[in-house]
Length: 153
Length: 159
Image (cartoon, rainbow over all chains, first blue to last red; front, side, top):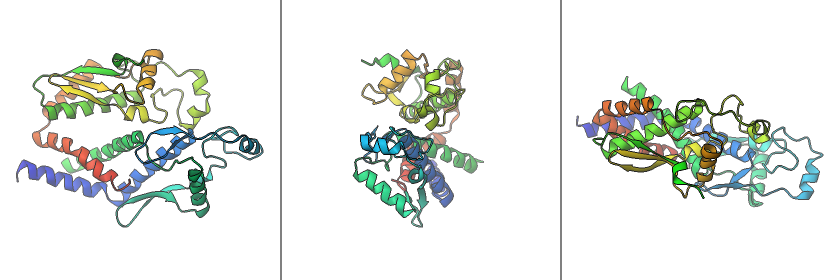
């Protein structure tokens, strides 16, 4: 076998291992973790591979009404971070499809509707920024290293 | 105005390293800098200065799941993940952030203002990484080079 063939064989094997259901779920869960964390910190991303920007501030009337709400400890009445009870962001999940792709979305219909509503209202959050994609790259590289060390044994 | 010297660091490496080897080494350097930050270690192998109390008591600190005893320069993690090989020439690799990077101000603030100089490695660590690149077979170097493409393919399942 030529060195080139050896490399291709190695890579094909790694790709197969890394795109099994378990690993794809890990990668999807990491993407969800990044989106939730950034959103709770008060930033949205309007398009995939875009730049994060501060979420639009809350209206004065809504801030006032939030003072009476039983808010999650991850927010305050004045903070714009798409968190009230925290349920909508908690419901964001990564779902591995039979086709071998990963979808990030909501199983709960109410949370799905809420997410659409806040996005339409100018607070898009359910995308990955360029920097988050780089973080995911590093995460995948770590998984890859593990697979490489297994294959090289 | 951000200064290049506060957001980029030159690493002097053996001149016989090929472009492919320098690329592998550059990525190893970036990973080592991130690992050092995760361990709270600066470019000289010394512990980072502790976080200010105001920051530790802030909601952002809590939301980022940070610990006051673990100074790792990561709130969102975006800044460290955006570190890159800025330039690679015979005998020299430059690691850091382009002046146009949206993280340039944050990096300079961390290093110059807060005194947490993270862009760099203790000489011993750099030498270890260089010897790691020397000991790689051509096949391993080729695999390391092609893994970028592989990572993109896997990311494609998600994006």
